[in-house]
Image (cartoon, rainbow, N blue to C red):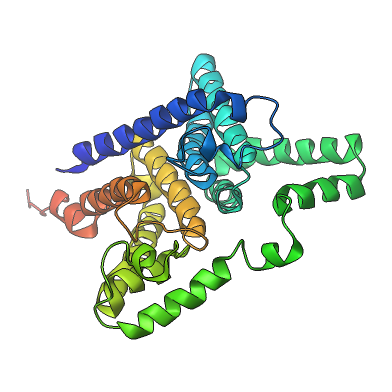
Amino acid sequence: SSLPSARLLLQVSWIATFVVAAIIGYQARDVVFGSASTGYWLNSTLNKVTRASGVARWAAVPGLVCLVRAYHSRGFSRIIFYLGTAAVSFFIVYRMQSRGAVFGSVAALLFALVISSKMRRYALPFALFALTALVVLDSPEMFSKQVVTYLMRGQSKEQFITMTGRTRAYEHSITAIEDAPLFGRGQWADRLIIGEHAHNSFLQALLNGGVLGGIPYFASWVTGWWMFYKLQKRNARLTREDRIHLLECGTVMMFFTVRAIPETTTASFAVDLLVMVAVYVYLESLSIQTGPERLRGMIRPYAVVPY
């Protein structure tokens, strides 16, 4: 069975994202945890090797995984560790002001609440309490202004509506796709042809691989969610460990699904692909292990033996 190896690959991937997020948090500690008004421009601190959206991605994955683990762990010390790690991770996401990562994290957390009855039982009342406290401590009008200010990031209305120039990148990407619709232009086609990031996974796939490359890319998302749906229906057959891993995979996959709209997710050789490969491998291994064919092979029919 490939399932034990798939579990190990998944856990190693979670640990890797946590380690990299911790390194980035330490290297940019003055921006992330200091007195700077925002961490969105931390790329100068990190010598322009990454941007706020990249840092937020690194922090969001371990944050989501640790939050799921916290609600499904036994032992006070483990729960405190996972909740503390998740709190620091989401604080980094908040400080980065990457809207794709923020909306992706919110969607992933809501998804986990809907899927997991245990998380609904504890997290939903806490979230309502926290929201009520914010409204009580501050007027709803002031609270809404703070949210708008946070999302606008000091941009003009035009910059916000154009998604910081993304609509321009989308138009140029579509034009470039029309020039090579069947096979595309290869890896990094957006940088070399339109001179900027495509900022959309599906446009990136079509730009890189054309229709022939885009179809399997679209199918990968559909297949991933279809496997999750089938496994969720077999949830009662899974071990406790696999139920937790399945929820982690679904939560992380929801984050990257939302992030695929304003950023490139798995359509190029990038970090997102490394994380999602581990998710897909685990989902497929678990599907094979718990599939009807395997179950039928395990069941032995009873024979009626006359006395």
